[in-house]
Length: 214
Image (cartoon, rainbow, N blue to C red; front, side, top):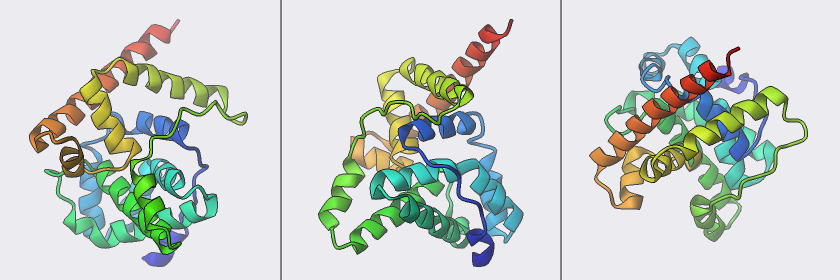
């Protein structure tokens, strides 16, 4: 199956802008992706490809934020999905969503790659680093920009605690247990915040889409 993973086509890369666009696709799909991981654990390569299609863009953005090198980030994403294939049976939905699981694997791989450069200090700094909001890239299409701006507006409308949980989960690639350890909040509270945030994001984005219709 490793060869099959290697053949998966790398998506285009961005940093926070790409993560926002990826989050747009994740909203409303958190529960639906859990059966995909169970199918991957059972050896279903088509389920892995679907999971890759859903989360490779966000995984690549997480890897790129840490490594700052496109080719290395793409390699890490391939390695991460090989690891997802091997570790899918260990997925526990009580600890977080399918996307959190995938992003946590990718983040761990990226940090390992950074440490292999002989810079553990840079790995620690990259793990905690907050990236400033980038300017839109010139190649960003109007549709991509609109999608990114929609998600930004929806995120801004969330309560601070829910927004923080989403950012740590989808932007930093932390599992819900890791978020609880970092923030000092009970795991149940983190789970509730992520669930409510995704539900509210879905509702906000649906309302905005309906309001945009002629």
